[in-house]
Image (cartoon, rainbow, N blue to C red; front, top):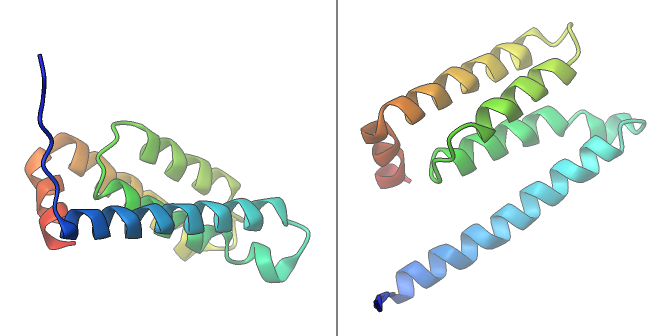
Length: 112
């Protein structure tokens, strides 16, 4: 059984951009979480993690991993950062809807 895959220049460009984006955002998340002693860097960790979850898992529907990431992000967040904690809960809820309603995920793929 052979399958022929078709491609286009647009698909190649999108794949390249997404690949570089994932390398950049995951590397940035790693640096900010590893540099917890540096206040200038560590203040960006929540924003980067939330951005990663939103941009990656709304386009590429993975079943449970974004939920785990949002729970872990919520757990590590300081209690005085209420808006960040609310954002983690919100992104958790949104990810549940994209998992339960495949057409919602298709909407996000078409929009972005």
